[in-house]
Length: 162
Image (tube, rainbow, N blue to C red; front, side, top):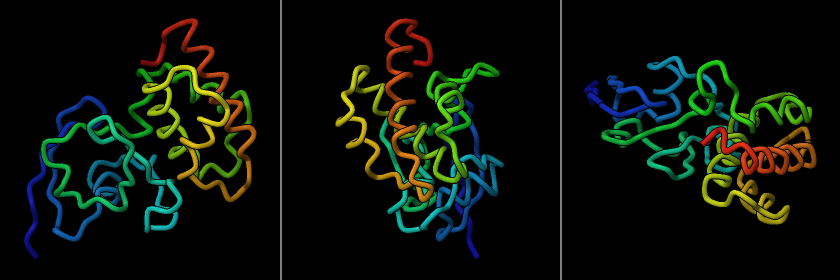
């Protein structure tokens, strides 16, 4: 089986790894780079649990081949925090008990970060629309929405987490 050498930037660090042509980016992140934050929920891009940021855009890592990551800049949920300092979204999710079982949480955090990067003061409707591609089987949506709203307020007053 042939493998492709992939060079990219993940969470600010230049990385390289080998991946077979059929390896998803999700599997490469988890198995080759030990970044296990993104989860496989459905494996078909319907649940958002594997959401990552690729070149500034929200992406389902289960739908992208690892070889397609060549030359890209990737941010996973692990890269949202600034060292030991949690991103305001991560902190408000903790404080707002928006985690529940936690399988969907990384995807929600990544999707919410993309939203707040593009729209620092979203309405509740805009938040719900932006997170519509992420499914929570524990039905914790209200806590998630309130946590994103609180993070938006914190980011607007402190500018942290950009």
